[in-house]
Amino acid sequence: MVKTVSLFSLLIVLILGTGSCKKTTQNELANGLWQVNTVNIDTAATNYLNQFPNFAGCSNCAYKLSFQEQNVVIGYYISNDSIKHIATGTWTVPSYTQVSIKVDNFIDGTFDIARPGINHWVLTSNKNHVAAFDNGVNPQFDTTYTKIDMQKL
Image (tube, rainbow, N blue to C red; front, top):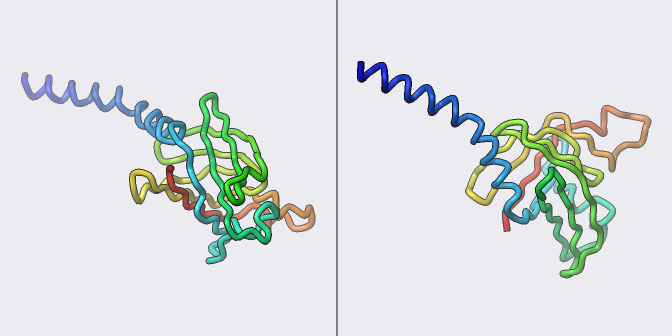
């Protein structure tokens, strides 16, 4: 009898707890500002963050993401402690291990989340749309594997 009650209690905890994992990911993203360290596209070692137009020729630049409530994300291009450009977009958390983000001209996909540290995340997607590369001629080159390394500030 005690064994049955214990198994039933464990089952209830598992059922009720599965939705909270998704909420944990939402809270971790929404409660803080994230600095994007690198953006690697198509498995290249190049940090494409330094290649995008708002960072061309910039030596002291940062790209930061602020995940807001109501599924709004704000991207900030910062140069020498001044905001150079702001982009707004959307985000959702389909599951504890995934986040869908659409902001700016290089982030538009559903990303798998790896958590190497409490405040360090690596996002990867096999189908990220990089509008910065969208020339209308070769669409296979503008939807690609993307890896985003970011740190919570």
